[in-house]
Image (cartoon, rainbow, N blue to C red):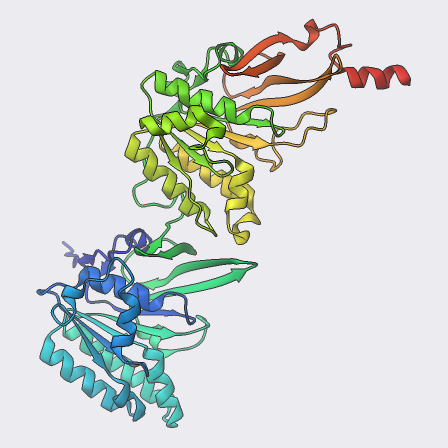
Length: 490
């Protein structure tokens, strides 16, 4: 019988990071937090330290910077995670700048050893470890000394049963470095600037003994600290919806009775529907009717607004629903959003309200809300969004603006029409010397639906569907008047 040693995992206190790490931080591990200047290394270390440190599990934070710890703490106090009551109680700061300046790694190691033996910490941080390395190189010491120092430090920390973090400014994770080899965990943080956008990403290059989530994970630094956004579809415990086949017999009213009939009795619960049309054709009004009908049926909803403010006078129906608590709003004005951040905001609001209906208004605004680096493959981002929402079991309506070309029907400017279960197209036609609106259901997966193209009007009570185009004398063979004129001219 094989006995497995169970490794205790510590909760880092950084939202999303435990998921990325594969369940938390292994206790007594020897870790490196690396990346270029200004990417958030020290903030990440402090946030974990303040979350983990207790009187029973104290922390030592060694600073190897030219500036005193007091100056560093001045800026860290701006974050919500900072707890002044823990300073000099559960957390102690020790300046190693004098020992580092000597350029003798044995002196630095002796100082760390003496403090650890005296304090018996459960958590040890060395910031910036890169300064120790540079001091050793300036004094002309061989690289073998650095490797010996790192190995001794790692062995000592493990024997002391301390979870250790070295924080350092490194620019290339492919460099041969003894620290990378000895470390149990390697957390690489980076940032990039595109136009006026700043995007921060994190990668777990190494974490011994547990299955971390692969790839780059975007994160944001705000007043609360760091928030990591685990990639959609790779979460440890994704919400599981019931099989969608069970919902085919359960139809939801979309808020316009005549349109429900065109859909074969309504939209199957759990489906996603794309409403595509040119500017002013009534997409947002249909979305508002969808949410309002849900409220009448006792269902809650969520709207992700990326264009106009739903709480303003431009959409009084949605504003009233929000005020009544029937609809929640995801209306982040934060710049440089990532797809994972948007999905996290949506799912959090869905779970908070136990919502069953979701509106995204619109995909065009959604694309612009993303940081430029995420717009390059918007098709993939949209696929991940639809997949994540489908996993929650909600019914989703997305609006999308199309250029009305009069002579052809288009369903999506992104080539993503196949991602949705249903498509409703709105467009303009020239009829009797007037610009009229028409609507058609062009797709409803696994269900029969009308193929009629019906005129509709909008008034204070919402959308009203009228007769089909073939019922109008202004058409010839189903073609709008301007096409008939072109045909007669030929």
